[in-house]
Image 1 (cartoon, rainbow, N blue to C red):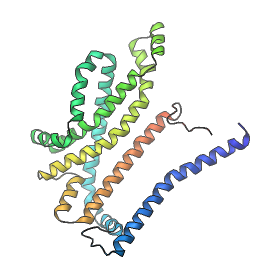
Image 2: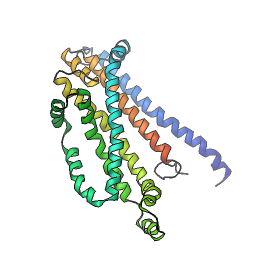
Image 3: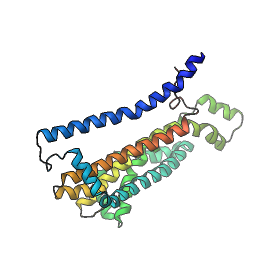
Image 4: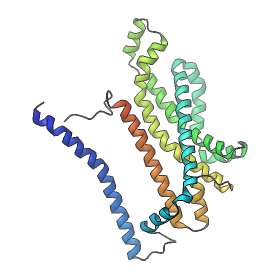
Length: 274
């Protein structure tokens, strides 16, 4: 590789990183400006479609009143994600160690995954005494399966020739798991983590919405419901804006964790040299 190409690579990567951040922000600015101009030009009443400036003004003035509900949603989301990592990862390890355990329990995990949470949530809220625990359980049911399935596939995807080589050299099951199967499963696990991060937020919002319709006030979904009863459209959009920001932040956090663990050795996270 020539010296000129080596000097150009850091500059090219810096420009790529800048564009990766600047382009979405530019698109967001264009969309918000167009929406603001359309609302003002056609003089649309704010109780039908509020302008972005009115939504941001509401968010600025009433942010402190939204924070407690936002924190509840964040707690449920991240606790559900944490328990999904622990439960899904541990169950995947059991599946990898014993095909009989996998055959016995995997169908029940699939049943939990394919049953719509919006249909199950009312029952859980009725039978579980604590609303907070019920919401956490709803979010966990949705979030744990991607981690379970992805990690199980990753543990099974270790190179069979290397597995035979480990057996040939007398490696124990623990040594094979630690030095071969877990590194093979790590990219799959992190892919499942990205999916579960978004799903835990979605499930938390759905469960909060169901609890809100039953008269139990909890997180941001309840505030959306409450604002809809009052025809406070800017308040609804402000809550949705917070939820969207939370979802983007979770995706960014899980992507950063994935990059942090993979960029030194796995092709999916390493920058390709041009």
